[in-house]
Length: 200
Image (cartoon, rainbow, N blue to C red; front, top):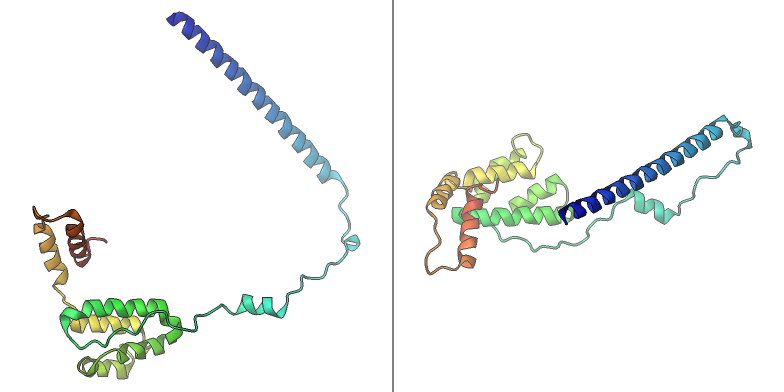
């Protein structure tokens, strides 16, 4: 019975091989026909340029032209104004992220670099404004009123330089408590992971 099965299998394989060879031969013949057709097209006399009728360029309506030149812009802010930062170090990170999101989403509505630079300053309360007044007067270290430079300056003043190392220590010792569900543990773990730059 095993020999019979092997014989049948061998005959099937031979039939498949013959079918593949026939298909390959057919494809080769089609390729040859296409080559012959292409060669005959190349040998024919090309049509003189003078006999080809001139075509007018496609016309565009003023509305179509204006859409292709002027991109659509947001007219209204999507996010509310972040609260003013009062200088509390523990609140800086949340405020910083809120400001970043605001400029990322509504930066075009606020304006260019200078307007965004001024907007950041407007979202500071009196104490942080006094801390950064010299920086603002210079327009940043290069005078370009770059919002990213302003954020870096604020991070230097109010960010916690040891936050990453502390988060790494907490991450090393972190365990899921016996009475803690995984759904509760996961956000704590992800926060420490983000604070330690573990996502990078």
